[in-house]
Amino acid sequence: MQPFSFELLHVCKQTGARRGRIHTPHGTIETPVYMPVGTQASVKTMSPDELVEAGAQIILANTYHLHMRPGEDLVAEAGGVQKFSSWNRPMLTDSGGFQVFSLAQLRKIREEGVSFRSHLDGSAHFFSPETSIAIQEKLGADIIMQLDELSPWPCNEEEAARAMRRTLRWLQRCMDAKTRDDQALFGIVQGAFFAKTRRECAREMAKLDLPGYGIGGLSVGEPKNVMYDMLDVVCPELPVEKPRYLMGVGSPDCLVEGVLRGVDMFDCVLATRVARNGTVFTRHGRLVIRNATYAHDFGPLEEGCDCYACRNFSRAYIRHLFKAGEILALRLCSMHNIRFLVRLMEDMRRAIEADSLRDFAEDFFATHARDNW
Image 1 (cartoon, one colour):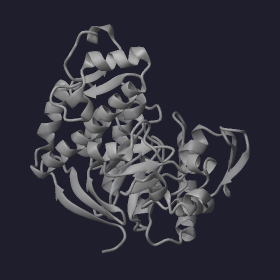
Image 2 (cartoon, one colour):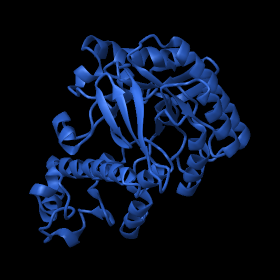
Image 3 (cartoon, one colour):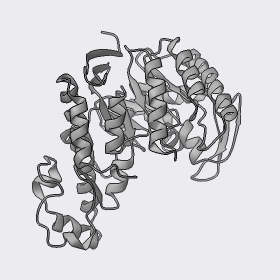
Image 4 (cartoon, helix red, strand yellow):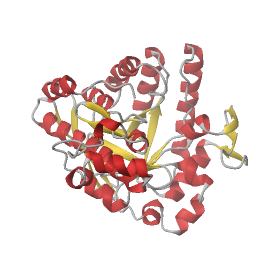
């Protein structure tokens, strides 16, 4: 078997949604899949064992942040990011591009790459397609991403086209720089919120026969219907036999809408970020456990949930932990939210296999509010 491959196992007759399987050097991933984000090679408040119990198959690490600290050389010395973090399962690293554009100070974009200053100490740095690949090769994840140029919301079509074409040129440089055969390099379809530029980018990338394709530059402030319109444009242009990865999207409603449109992979920090503020996912939408209404509620966060938090603790107890400033509160809500999204993907995989994803989605949205996360 090749170090990386994708099997398309079934296409839902109701919707065209896809059920697949990704093979990597560190294990197999059943798709569609939600991938928890471990920015610093750690999913906040959760241990690797807890992620495994929640059903996580693959997690992300952040190239920009690991480059800033502890540095890719130290990670390579430890044997790669999986050994460094004791996560002996598939892992993906992003290119660092999104963080450069969103976090770094005084950034300057030119054809060679991006000059910027660290958000930690103001030190000067430079990312090019070649340096991004070199960093990710030292980190050693199974799936790595090209350096791309992100278009902001809003922007005009000329700006979007310019950034999209630079992304295509940078992709070729990433491909030329890549040396490791045990890592799969994904391109990232850009083009902002314009069908013409998105379609051009997807078609040009499809010609390159990459292992997989990211869809970037969405969920950056635009209305959700605009994001869905762009998925309707992009997904039909991408190769059927390769996985499609919608980057940075992870609210329950967006996962369902993305799978309906043929997306295979998703990631987002939302699940653990809102958990640390006392907000949890349920089949009926968000629940804010800090609210006084739960002070005497001795039921679980969600009836029927099989996560560790719901099996063992009540809403009243978890609310008490938040009010007392106990770290366990953050951990329990994070466990629940990760498990909720993982279980949602499990349910959708079964629905695709049964050719009933449209029915599943209708039932889901009959009870689950389309929250504006």
